[in-house]
Amino acid sequence: MIFRWLKRGMPRGLYGRALLILILPVVTLQLVVSVVVIQRYFEDVTEEMTGALSREIALVTARIPEDAGHDAALAAMAAPARVLKLELRYLPEGAELPETDRDWYDLSGAIVLRRLDNKLPGLRAVQLGGDGPARLYLDTSAGVLEIGVNRRRLSARNSHQLFVNMVFFGGVMTLIAFLYLRNQLRPIKRLADAAAAFGKGRHLPFKPTGAIEVRAAGHAFLDMRARIERQIEQRTLMLSGVSHDLRTPLTRLKLGLSMLDEADRAPLERDVADMQRMLDEFLSFARGTATDTLPENTDPGVMIRELVEDAQRAGKPVELGEVPEPGTTVALRPVAIRRAVDNLIGNAVRYGEHAVVSARLTPRNLRIRVEDDGPGIPEDAREEALKPFTRLDTARNQDRGGSVGLGLAIASDVARAHGGSLRLGRSGRLGGLCADLVIAR
Image (cartoon, rainbow, N blue to C red; front, side):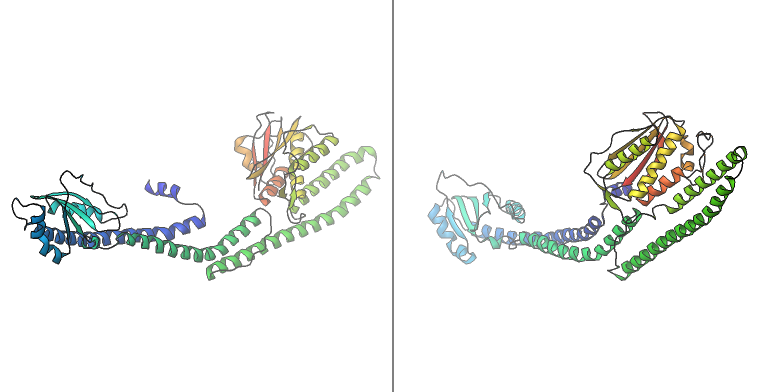
């Protein structure tokens, strides 16, 4: 339970945790040293010094004769007071007695007051504040005696300077350590930024720097990125070549079928058209985002409007919902995003009578939503529907135009290439499928 509470209270960032690792030991060490030094040095030494002064004052005041006046009492105490360096004078009759006080930063003052009060029964007040000597007011048989004594004789000198020095030098050393540690953490942060950008389909220039272990991680990331890019390129080239090779016999089949009679030609031409369509979808899925260059600053509102207008011109029952106002741009691969949204629109109008396309832009992500009024997809089958070549016969109507099972897979692949995801749900507006293409900004 306590570890769960500590985990919630820990900083989430690398710099915050590093700073905590630096500050916590320094503060703990300072507290331990402060307690030990104050208890073993300032407190014990102050008590000894105050006790010694109390005995000296008791020795001097013991020389006051019975029923003596101010002058006689001062004369009797003059010799020992001069030797002990005590300033003595009596307050006039009826004079107002000062209040006990000390400076707020005088850490040993409380110990001095407590010790004097225990050792001098007739003590009325003590003034420890200011730059001058400390003054004690003591009841004697001759009246209220004011005793002036050097402040250094009551406690160790400037005890507050210990805390000032500890805080100052502790802060300086922590700052120096943090600046050094920041230089060590900077390569890790650059590596994290490059990895996050690659996950979103961006290619940031990265050069491994820093400690040996960080350099090793950086080189491993560069090798991994190069292998993934090479694999995507090889897959695209291979399937493009296969597509090109298959188009040639399909073209010959079309030419051969054109010579047959209409009754015999129609079903065969439909089969060839299906093969052509499946081949195009296979190639589109294999291509993924490889046909795009680096991400471009794209206005999502303008792009969604153009896609809906193109669908409407093609006779599809698509409606434009709420979209961001023009002027705000997001780093996107426009060709891939258009392909993904177009596939979602095609699925929506294939299995429903009406579709609505909308978009919402937040500081963290871009969400493009396509809703339809079709049968939708059951919740337990939505994860399966995102896999390539998956067709859910019980969920969608297979009699409307046929499907290879790649539309949602292509959209999901494009979303992952942008560091996002494709989320499927039920449309609260139309009652059918709700497909959210969420892209991290």
